[in-house]
Image (cartoon, rainbow, N blue to C red; front, side, top):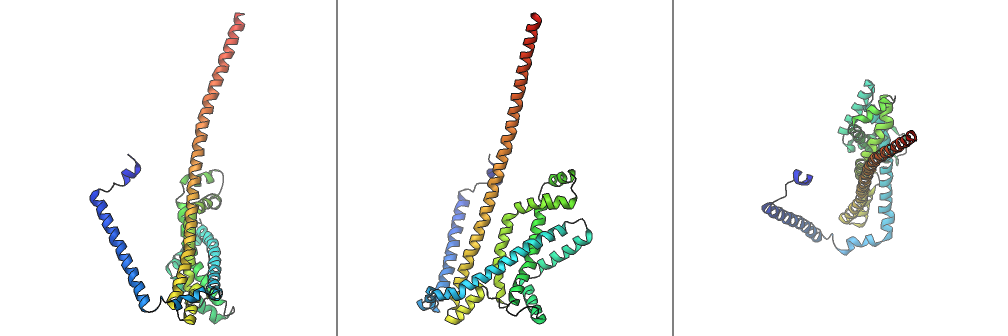
Length: 313
């Protein structure tokens, strides 16, 4: 009996019939909803050619979508790099042997995980606007990146900490047995393994960061959603402009999702290869031991025969 049969009972004829009925009903509901949306858009004149013809003009892409895509990528890239670096420091702090450092990082992580990203962006934007430390056109970018960093670094910190906690206890004991301190064991042995194991989750969090850049729309950061709104106002085609922006977000995030799946598949293949190599090495060691024993016995037998012959001589 296979593991799949033990963990999951194969559905019978009635269950299969019920699943098919539910699938058909679900497809009909989705098709009906999409048809109703399409009919409403047609009734409001959102599907006419004059609403969609501007997207055939290269200047629309050059002046709106490409700059919006670049600003989205710029904010996301800055937030990803800073969040990853800060998350490592926070994870080390949360696992530290120093109680005050552990308490401070715990409060930081729990607080910024609970506060919505949009509130942090708005607060940072108005704070910077009042202080006047940076040019006005730079404040939306800094506020967007700050909100993304504070939230996502806290989330990634917990991802790394859980990854370290999921490692076998022998990894820590091995580090301590060779003379490493607890912090050195975490830094040299545990955290690198946790990052490797949690890499698909980290890449998935990047998708969240890219999507959350759209919240900069509220503080006038000129990302992709803001550019779509500007285009809709200029060309009087707000709904098509937002639909194209949504399609671009879907393409970007789908590509990142496929990247996460590829990394996960690669790690799974490497794990299987390492397991096969370990098994082959173990079998080779056993075969070598048997061969060595046979050789040793043969040599002993030869020596004994020679000794007997010499004695007989």
